Image 1 (cartoon, rainbow, N blue to C red):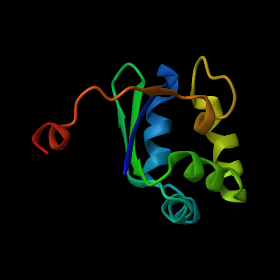
Image 2 (cartoon, rainbow, N blue to C red):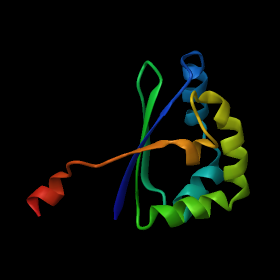
Image 3 (cartoon, rainbow, N blue to C red):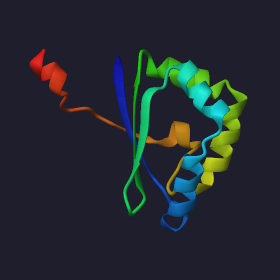
Length: 109
């Protein structure tokens, strides 16, 4: 299982609206994420707008491609793109992926 962590920066003036949108994610978007292999997916937001995402996937590249092929993802990305600063492209493609440097189970295993 591939563990993926990424970051984006939410515009400070849009934080409350961003949180509200994620209280009511479209059911078809949630289903598409799950069906395409975005497992154990979480978003964490700091007060200054730093957004950290985490997910697990058997093949993240394939999971991204599967989502990119869905109509619901195209609509969601278009709506959500305006929430981010310094974004080159769509949010699901323009994030900065972080490098994992420690995983407890790997150390214990």
